[in-house]
Amino acid sequence: MNGSACDTDAAYRARLRASRNQRRAAVFIDKDGTLVENVPYNVDPAQLRFMPGAREALAALARAGHPLLIVTNQSGLARGRFTRLQFAELQAVLEQRLRDEAGVELLDVLVCPHAPGSRGQPSCLCRKPAPGMLLRAAHKHCLDLARSWMVGDTLDDVESGRRAGCRTVLLDSGGETVWRLTPLRWPYVRCTEWDAVAQAILGDRLRALVIEGGQPHPSKAG
Image (tube, rainbow, N blue to C red):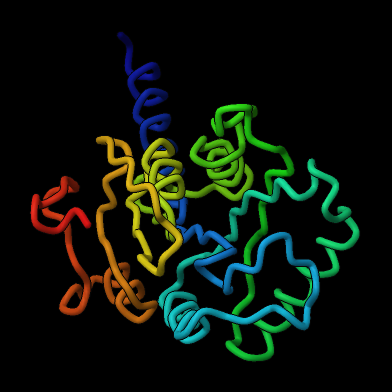
């Protein structure tokens, strides 16, 4: 290999390293039962109530430089429970309230509008526990999934994050009722409050339940 070829190869590797360094570590957040209280098929802004501590935690994550994105299954669209316009109006109110009440600007809101299959499994590539929304966001916004986090109140959220290559937080607020545990559904961290979620992501795990090595401790699997 001649000198010019070596120089070209070295320049390519340098560009590749720079590209990787430019990718940001994001936090993906489930909406219903995680960010806001779960009111089934709700599109009424008057019923939009943040989970305790959620606004303060998101503000702390944003101050630390983490882009914040909502990733949400909304089968009510496919079922005809509400229209895209109604959901868009709710989304606009949610985003504005985060700006006004927490000083938080969301990077994006990704929505799966599809209903699950007859046995409850995803019938598309985007409905959680499939990772499609996270993968699409990573490509669109140049995000580093390996350094990103997925926060949700069900093991479907956890599985979606793990399939995308993220670290995962289960916000154990009562949303998970089946507890069908598989290797892809073990959360990296399990918390019961939003302040513990923020501490875990920011590196302070004193009040978070850490599941060692990404695998569950037998007495801590819930």
